[in-house]
Length: 429
Image (cartoon, rainbow, N blue to C red; front, side, top):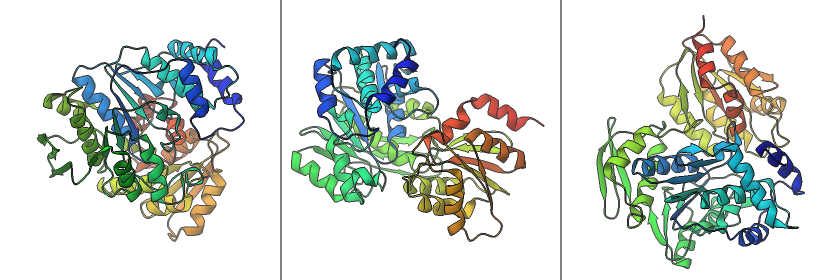
């Protein structure tokens, strides 16, 4: 293999199953690579809000002048999005070389696509002379490949029901898995306002330094500005974060707590905080594309995140008709997802996605139809997200809005052409 795409195609065939929880295999290869970070490391786990948290941490630390590295997953369009070095996506060539470095030492150890790519990205980041590394935990925490790295500070965002076949069927079980990223004697920031007891118990059991929302840090605000207070620091009169949505203040509060906890090693100024939050960008998180009709892109893919999307849509005000392009994974709680947002959607455009795990568009339509009680709502099925979006745009009037949600792959599917072309279509006669 020479190119990144060749490595990715090969990795998909390497392991007999896509998800194989456990750290033994990935830890064996990491030890052979002598993988370690010389800089402070922040790991971020949770059901929702991980990507936003990582993006805000990165934006503030870049404004403070630090050399940052960020690992997030999955990507929307290009694999290179998963690794950002000094604020820019890593090059395909650098990533291909990192994949080769993993393969050179793994021997007969079989790795999943995620494990192999995680090791490659961690290897690249560890060699990039970083001041701080920010690592988003993939699925769960305790047994996730990212958890081979000991974090100087852990952040646990909101916890809700998702991936129940692997993580457990209730918040307590899922919380225990997320809590596995904590380390004894190091700070753990829990930004979930009502965390599972299992998270709090684990922090106490291992002697982690627990920073809890509502006790160790909090925020307040009005329509114009907001303020944050932690154990030893306060910020007031701040503009709202550039990432839209009511839930982003909770995420931002956890970010400021993590930076406060790490202040002895990576101090940041109040101006860096203000500038970073004002400039942060993250595609697909209640991302509003201006034009006529308005387009909203959101990777919400479980009942909790879809409920947050519904709140944010309601806050947008009145639109004559709301169109929704929806594709989702079959293992999600699809009925609850559709129910949460059904009252505000007038026309549905269900789409297939190019993955074996994805629900078929006709099945999504059937699940929606079984619980829909709106006689004035309609639905259709489409082979891919872009075709569904085009159908919605043709049907929509200029004063309407179109929502795209349900999966990273749904939003990524409409971003393949890029935002500028989408805007041009919106504004064309």
